[in-house]
Image (tube, rainbow, N blue to C red; front, side, top):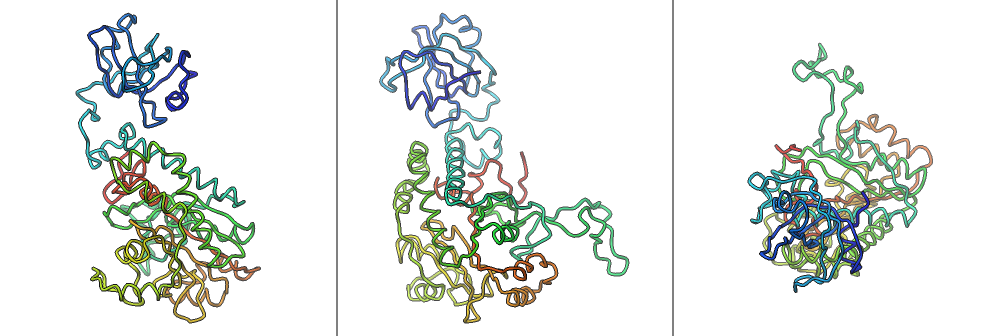
Length: 465
């Protein structure tokens, strides 16, 4: 079927032209004058196209007057000037073909306002609502912008494994992958531990929490790379900020240090904000009007902002001198909490902040150790309203330091032999970061709960659809 998208019609209406559109009925209103007004939406944009269906249509009585919200149709007709004041033009239907009726008593998306919590229970239909259609379009724009940003800088797009035997973060919150019979697990006769040698991969395997380690291997061969794929964390958290399945963007740069990493991260964020402001104006207006009245202003201010850079130690000093009482006390050596990060960005600096030089003990084993022996070349990029949006570091390129740190956290360097090989065979300084894609979509839309910015959220006790 050759059809015109509704967003094309609304952006460039050619009055007098014959067009074909297809979509789902949002509303139908019948006039005493012998015709019906149909609001049609095809998901290509926020707006609807008004269709005028005359009672002279052959299927008017048998089908058109039975079109309820959710019904799907194909309409052929002529674009004409509207007689009403609410729109400048409308589609005068010459033919309305019904593809699928919708039973109004059973359809869960009625005219009444539906809570986001309820819509999660019908996630297979929620994309038909204004809110989730707009979220999907902003998400698409941010994904495209991500690829454009890195491709324009000659980064190589890399697909890293979803199934892995390596724990990148050392947190232990990984989903296990196995073909062993769960009702009768094979065990070593001496230790009674599960015998993973009999498993599909011959050892314990899990869903990845990050593609970083594998990404480093390609960066240390081909230069700058980035990954953009699903990651998983078995964290039993039901907060509005956590998902069990989420998408990560993880660039890795060869021959780069922490300053290069911070430059890239800040440039990337500014690019995303500019792109979504330029290409998602209608959807952002909806979010600004209905969800968070500060969204557009925040994105506009950040699109050209300069990021302040401070050390972790300076951040702790600022927080201690603030005179504020935080829920989590501020002490050197403890991780910064969201309330601390938001104070720095929203009250102290009133803008985005990049914090560097975190204590070694609260960061991952692969981060380069600084000469002071207490901190690592790590960074967190903080934004107002959200706190940390990006975490990154310069990687430890010195074999002896890396192996010592792996042992220090209770791991065996032999389990990371291939990762250590990068330091044996032509080691180079390299750095990278990670950005949780859903966090970015949430930030750009103002949506309160992260489960509402991914098509099908995975969380504790929630794996429907």
